[in-house]
Amino acid sequence: MHRACGQSTRKALRVTAVDAWERYAENAQPRRAVNAAGAMTWFNWTQYPDHGPNESVLGDVRGRNVLELGSGSGANLAHLATLGAYCTGVDLAPTREAAARQRWGHQSYLTFVTADVVDYLTNTLASFDIVYSVFGAVWFIDPVILLPLVRKRINSGGALVFSHLPAAEQETHSNRMIKKWNYPAEEWVELLLNEGFNATTEIIPAPAADQPGTLLVRARAVTFEPTLSTARRMSPDAMTA
Ligand SMILES: C[S@@+](CC[C@H](N)C(=O)[O-])C[C@H]1O[C@@H](n2cnc3c(N)ncnc32)[C@H](O)[C@@H]1O
Image (spheres, rainbow, N blue to C red):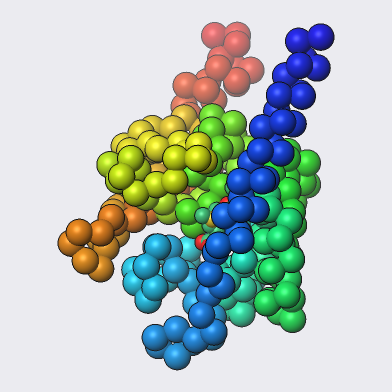
């Protein structure tokens, strides 16, 4: 009985979230055809055009399985596909998948899926070398739910990288209609460590002093190796000692 109530509540929340993101998509500007450097595809971690670090933050992507959480219209992912990555983008809003396919459908090794990333990660059998999110689903899902699912599907040593507004800027600059997990950098590091990731953070300064910067979190899935004490506990000799 309780379980059924919980499921219908979750379903209702999902419908509300899809509606909210579809409304957001209606006003989203498509990415420019060409950037300031004259490139037709590029990667941007920030909310400002032609600003901040590029895909090099992810390391060498050629031949890697890459997953974007909340891929929007797919422009960052399309860039990684041009560099030889095998790319999957997941987004909750159906029109985002349609827009991404329309703009980037000609590109090889690029797949777009409409799903809640929690459902996607729960159900997929795929594993990934790189998982990332740019102002995307990592910001909008309770990390206690999301991070263990990412850890399950990411290869040991794999990279989880995401960006969003710094916590200090949330109140003044963000849309309050959509719930966000507004953790300061040091809390993200702690949360990630608890779920098997080593992480570092930085704030990418904005182009102008009166604008908010961008929080960039880089994490690596830790390879679990037995410590000496674990190995002793597990060794048959230790049992007889
Ligand atoms: C602010 S937009 C950013 C889109 C894209 N990453 C970009 O940089 O343009 C956030 C995106 O996350 C998606 N999103 C939010 N919650 C999600 C969830 N639970 N599962 C999948 N996608 C989600 C939204 O539909 C939206 O397209």
